[in-house]
Length: 135
Length: 119
Length: 146
Image 1: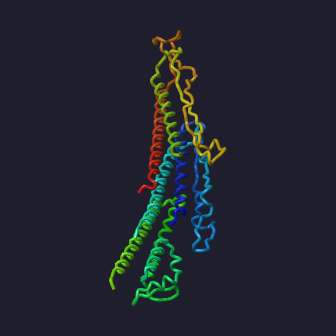
Image 2 (image 1 turned 135 degrees about the vertical axis):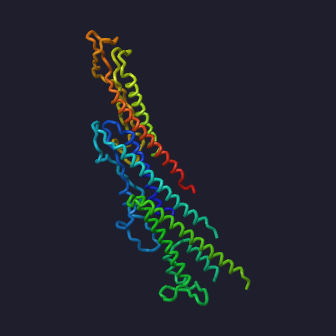
Image 3 (image 1 turned 45 degrees about the horizontal axis):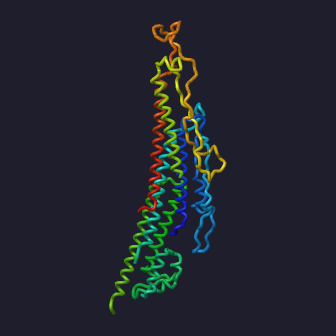
């Protein structure tokens, strides 16, 4: 169990992206009556999945047992995709925000955010436990 | 058993590196419990020993940790939506690891107890 | 930083909707006002929303993509409509003109009430967004605490 391991990096990246998503959702909700405003979406799932490469399809093969798997894409340059939602229903003033859908997205985002923080705590708690156990 | 063996075992338990452990013939030879229990080196077919149990358990715990890791990564990247299963897997791996740690403490305690005995 | 920016965005939504509710209240209260300081009947007020980019968001990540950033909203202007006032036939009214018509404000109270409900819903959604953002920030403070 390494402090730099993939899972912790993935969790940290996912937490950051979910914060960004919350910002975009807040913006959509605040502008749900603004004429001409287009609803926006933030997608980070595919970028993160690529960087993680959980099933090992795109990764390097580890030959020696001692070599750590550093992951394929690396976590340093993860770019989320931010774009106008193409599925928005355009109302007469040009606004494409669906307020109820945004509220639902916000709830889901919050639940996942909480889960990720909790998992991060668990992992670090386990590491602390292993380090502190004395005999 | 010698002191070096036990501190070695302690180190390997801390490092969690099962593959190295199983490759070590030295370790197999040093696990000499006397009559009835034999140390095992890879390649020998014999009845199950305490060493085998330990190895199996540690590798099981390791596997559980790795499974939990994979589940967490899938949850973080949005591939899986199984919140409860992921949390369960992590919790199981936690408990398994802590149990193993307790066992290690007990084994070391037992060793110390033995060492205290006057011959 | 991102979460604090979210709160600013949501609070801008709250302010804009509050102004909208003020305008609606003013319209409803003055639905029968035929005499104003500027002369003539009350003119219906309307609030126009505009959005502008919340500065400093994502600038490190998305340089140059100005129109795809999170936007704050504000009520850019409160306009009084320029429509011709509605003429109602009521010769007994003190403000009736020579033909007996009174110029009444162009306020449809039913429509104003519907707008008010919509503004209230929008206000509540923004409150919900602020609460969620706040809980996320509090949760983030729990990292490493166990």
